[in-house]
Length: 436
Image 1 (cartoon, rainbow, N blue to C red):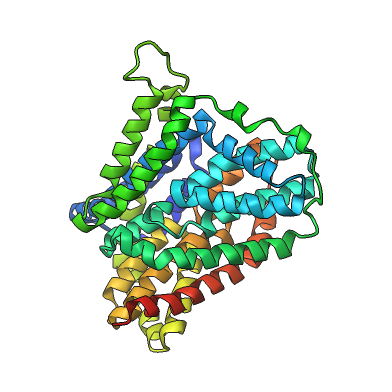
Image 2 (cartoon, one colour):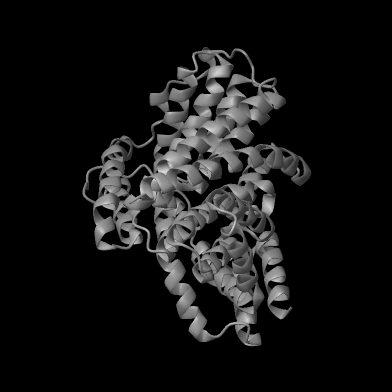
């Protein structure tokens, strides 16, 4: 009960963030209380840090890359091109915006897609003078697709990185399994969002209201460097997967390269355009404290009873066959994530899967189902992920406030079918590529 109480209070403080405490210090405060009360010990600190350090620094590097590209105008340029490709037809623009969100989510993580693309889409919608109902359709689509298509690569979501590291899944193997599954998730997302918002999507919009995409580029050196850097980065991630190189080292090198270009470190004649001080100020440094602090609190909760309880449920699901085990694990992870946040839910799921005695194939299905559940499941509630809370905060700051009740009404209806079909795709695809 003490472990449950400490976790509950910590989660409240993480969401509330009183007096500007931030998510990091709120989580660390909970960890300190857990240590003081004996729920966890100093030996557990080393265990948890070994689980989260690579994922945490990979995420920080990825967001720094995203922030620099955003400052350079990269995402605004892409969004304006998408708006022009819509050719004045709202019913074409809607799926194009969703696909843009899917691409950004795959390469720049769900947080980057939700937090960086949303303000740009809002600015375009305002310029096109869309009605509030029409704007809401695009806003929800942008936020939802950021999570529902954050499956394909290890770097697409912090959940993916933690899970891949915990179960020693290579970058290449992860992509082999999840890229096709992510395509199903994207198709399901397109279909469900279209059915839900089809009456609110405008038939036409005025292309003359849009500025030229080239005008959005603020730093051309960074902009043109982005394409080869991203290509080299992906090749490096696949090649080094065989050597078990920490992903954070590769992502860190890419971030440092982009920082050097943005800061004009090798060009004394030209002053920099992008403020690196601004970028570093807005980088998610508190996620380092949050990862260690929150995971320590959850590790203590898991040791107390939650991991044993979760492994019992998984063992029961495993007796029902591959499809039931996959879908059941995914929905169980999703429900847990929607209640306690997807990052702690990911750890509980991983620890439980590691303890349950099942066949190697069932275990693999459960591992990937846990990832899917924790990537998509947070969309059930606003507290399911920090990205959603930050996304809602960004919308409120732009005078587009969405209440928790309104969010959950939409989130449950949209998430449930997408989650089901994505898990079903996993249950069909993984056995095919794992067959001897």
